Length: 174
Ligand SMILES: [Zn+2]
Image (cartoon, rainbow, N blue to C red; front, side, top):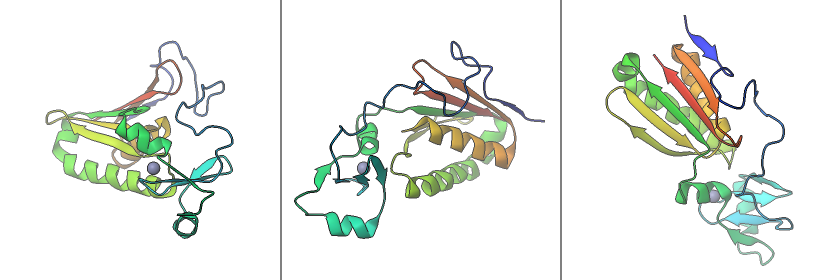
C-alpha cells in the first residue's frame, strides 16, 4: 500500500496545507499599474492582474502602442533558473519504467502549461538510473506532477515545505 503524507515532513511549517495563508509576494509578478503586457518569449498576456494565454487577443494586441512587451515571470524564472518546486522521483520501479514515467510527467506538464502561463517545467534531470529530478516554476506544478505519478503508480508521496513558503520539495518513490 502506498503512503500519502502531505504534512509530516516539513520542518518549521507543520500542518501547512495547500493554499496556505500569509505567503510572501512573488518577486516575479509585474509591478502595479502595468496593465496590458505581452511576453515576447511565450506570448502569454497580462491583463487585469493575471497572466493567461489567448492567441487571438495576442495577435490583436501585438504591436499596439499601449501594450508593453515584457518577459513574463515564468520565462524569467526559467532563464534565471529560479525553481519554486522540486519533484524528486526515485526507486527501482522508477528505474524499470522510467521512459513511461517521463512521458506521463511531460504530458501532465504540457496539459497544465497550455492553460496556465505560470506553471512550467524548468528542467528534468536524470541522476543515475533510479533517480529523476524535475524543477518547476511553481510549487503547484511540482505537487500536481507528484500526484499524477502517485495516481498512476501508487508508491510513496511526500511533500516538504521550506521557509519561506514559496518553495516545495515533493518526493515520490517506488
Ligand atoms: Zn513568457
